[in-house]
Amino acid sequence: EVSLLESGGGLVQPGGSLRLSCAASGFNFRSYVMTWVRQAPGKGLERVSTISGGGATTFYADSVKGRFTISRDNSKNTLYLQMSSLRVEDTALYYCAKEYVVMGATRRAFDIWGQGTMVTVSS
Amino acid sequence: QSALTQPPSASGSLGQSVTVSCTGTSSDIGAYNYVSWYQQHPGRAPKLMIYEVSERPSGVPDRFSGSKSGNTASLTVSGLQAEDEADYYCSSYAGSNNYVVFGGGTKLTVL
Image (cartoon, rainbow over all chains, first blue to last red; front, side, top):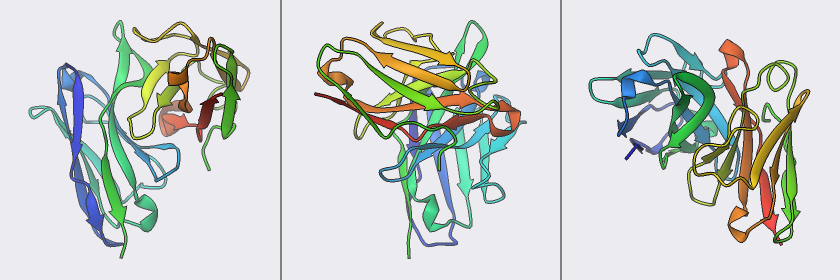
């Protein structure tokens, strides 16, 4: 079964750091673009960061650029999000999501999502 | 403020149809046929319902359909069922710099 499992969330003070992990199983992890998407309480979805299958190419939302770093370890089938200089507005449920590919072509959509890990930034 | 604009709420009666709109710009929805729609029930992760404007992943009922005209995409749910009550989010590819952008979500109520 294809699945994603996030971990690493928690309560952190403003200015602090946290590293999120996303363990993938059931698919050839290294072949897929992976993305972190967050959802603030009662709010909509926001793409945070995206990384190519090999890890060489990354994208960041302007709101986290320079503070967050996405990475992956394909030998461990794991995606990471290193978050630093955290702000109150970073408080959200963080999902990892797998790119949807059909017949070898990306569909610029996300077909598999984890259940999310909650990050709360508060003093 | 979300990149794509959706109405905050929509409603329809059991068995009826409802359409949810998603308005973007010529840099996202208007430029690419990579519009997706996600369904999210409370406390659950989003679920992909429509991709590439009007395509349905395996397992998604054909009651769900999508379309696009210019900078606006639409999701139509026909034959509304109680389980369709959820939040719906649109997204669009927006080029190599912005990658994918989302709408603010629409809460669909089944009356």
